[in-house]
Length: 120
Image (cartoon, rainbow, N blue to C red; front, top):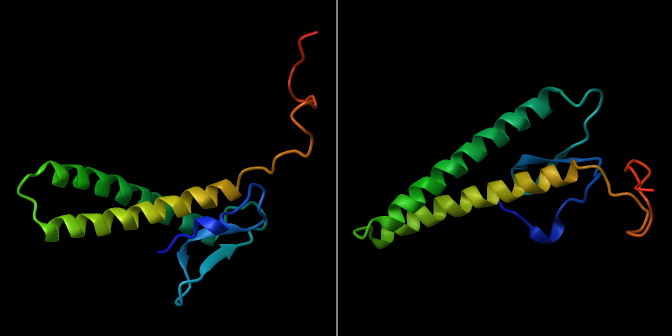
């Protein structure tokens, strides 16, 4: 999967970036309805969990490979390929989760937040 850092989601986005793409490489989005726990949401959550697990395994394997002085160029290239794929997936997940955060409030940094206690 490709990741486009120039088109990151913004907090409060009504669409969820899914962890897969269309057949021609375009991103897929989901407009959740109801409780937000539908079939596609659960499928995306499971796929993200698997991708994060794969990233952890790729990271561990890359560390092991880099410590191996006998690792040749082919093995290093394969590990780099696997690691960059895992990193791309992880960035996509982070982007998706950023879009699911609440949108920041419109008041400036000097404005008081009514939800925070004041010390008066």
